[in-house]
Image 1 (cartoon, helix red, strand yellow):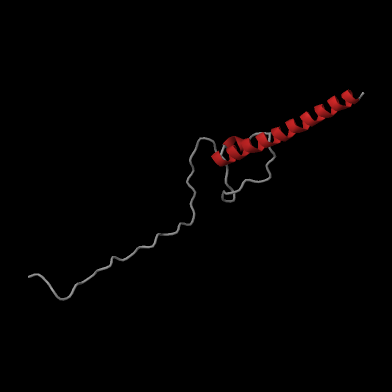
Image 2 (cartoon, rainbow, N blue to C red; image 1 turned 60 degrees about the horizontal axis):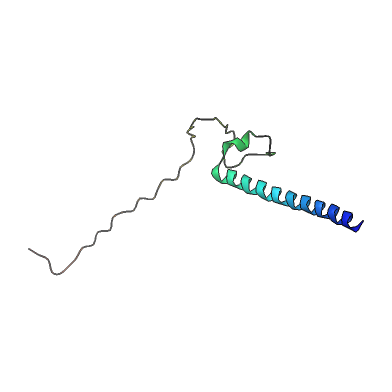
Length: 92
């Protein structure tokens, strides 16, 4: 009887370890997809999405098209060249 209880416990423990491993593997795969910016994350039924961030309001995903969006751009600062004048020994 003790051996049966031990085997059932071992079976449940193995199932628990398999569940933890699956969760880790799934999270690692999701992190990789997010890092790559995988567009299939927006259309898959595997994950629930509540909102898409890092896009202007009203943005639409259009597969295979590059869309230019008008917006505010910061103009780079233009530096004035420094003029250094030496006084004293001048060649003639």
